[in-house]
Image (cartoon, rainbow, N blue to C red; front, side, top):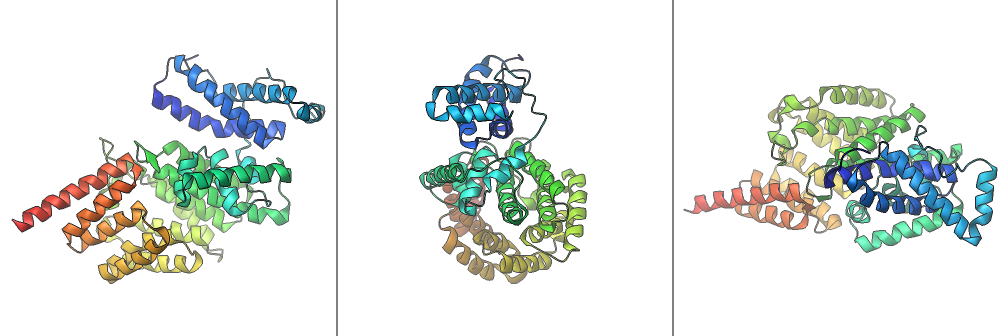
Length: 416
């Protein structure tokens, strides 16, 4: 055992190791539903016991405790005795005391299992984010722009459907691989987004979650090296992740793109992302992840914010809008429209996105930025205030409130 961890370290370790522990236990026992319950019980025990000292191998600890809980559940339930004997007969279940090193990483297999064809993408993606990404139901609901209770019901139904369909840890048939891969990519995309800008909490980001999404995307790329969209997804993640070192200052305050120190960006990530993207787009099957990566590449390769090639970015967003009926695309495109066609056109673009996204805090934040570009400090300050009231991320809230204060002070000076 190591020394006593602080609360943040403990939370980080539980988030980091829980998904891989679930993949190991579910793979060994061929029982996703039971494994998830067992790992959740192990996490509760860990949250208490690890306060007095961490185990030498946290993941192995979780796997061992969860395995014991699962075996105990099998033995105590008459209806499951036959399944227990079968698992032991085929050698799938290790002894409860067997060391769990976790050398075999079944994380990608768990992703593909959760993307079972019996599940619609709307059910498979939240389930995978919960099981593999370790996201809370509230975080997933925020990503899908639905109430938490709605998402909880959706995940519960997905688990029941997967159980009824007899989903197993087996390579999917060739005719199902494409569909599962598309769902898996969307899962990893949402995982990365949550890691890059957390939907709630004190910190702007969750680097561990973003790193896990990149790791799983690399595994998917190794399995499907000729799929240009998988390569485009990794490129998008790397080109976006490259900016992380300059996204917050020494005090943890959010730094907007226009003010970031580009010398601190990760040049290795940018170089790898550009190579992956270039190779993918040469194949002639351009998809939405490649286009998003291309937008990120234009930003990353501009020496300064003033040198940004906004017409090219606006063109890429138009192409993306033709491929993806996604209001977030329109939301992100608004700034590019403002820089090429003016604020009035951008506000019209934003109104279209707002009709689909409703009262989302990012709508108000982008509107505030546009009003500020137009020199309307009063409306900009009001929009920043509205955005701050609607975000659960404290780093974002502080930035938005500071912007509102700055503009309110400016408008006050202008009236004096």
